[in-house]
Length: 263
Ligand code: 13P
Image 1 (spheres, helix red, strand yellow):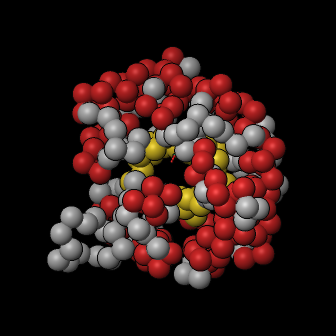
Image 2: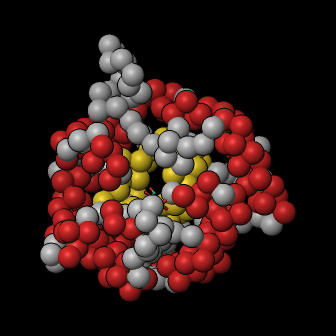
């Protein structure tokens, strides 16, 4: 399987947005767009990651869509099972609520919540052990890119993860490359730069696991309807992790459509 034959994923990361009424409207509009012109299930996986408090309602709304749209958790506890960990939601509790996907390693978690590779490894390990699929985010800062360290930083983040993943668990991992300088800035990596990094990531993955060639590697960082087609045209870009543009139903729909049609 070459990078370009992997079924793409388009996942909307809503971050700490929006208010309940707006979320409801956003989902209604998105479902309506799918109803009017369906994006075939076999052409693209689609997911939405709402705030934790809205996981259940999002799931209920999405169950009424014409095609499967996954509900994705934005975070998971580093503690497993159940117990006295106030404020935490474990991988087992997510699974128990039929949430099958979770983001781990987002740069906002690494930065604002000081999540180290040890914490991220515990989260990823718990999620994988509970049978969840992990969307594992990696990416370099502007300073790291400008000093020529981008590749080494990103590959190190993948190696960190590799220290806790056992063989067949790689099948349940999706990588999201999100250069920090492109997140929420309107500054997208050029398709050439993004493809170059994705190819490096794939090369690294194939050295670590026999599943490397078939793993989806998503790009994130100011993905919009306007740049989705050119990103989707890159062989090793197997989808998008979309922030801001996923808060607009039409934009999010167009991004999913671009990946479904271009791949
Ligand atoms: P933006 O699309 O708003 O740049 O956010 C990207 C992101 O962080 C998705 O996880």
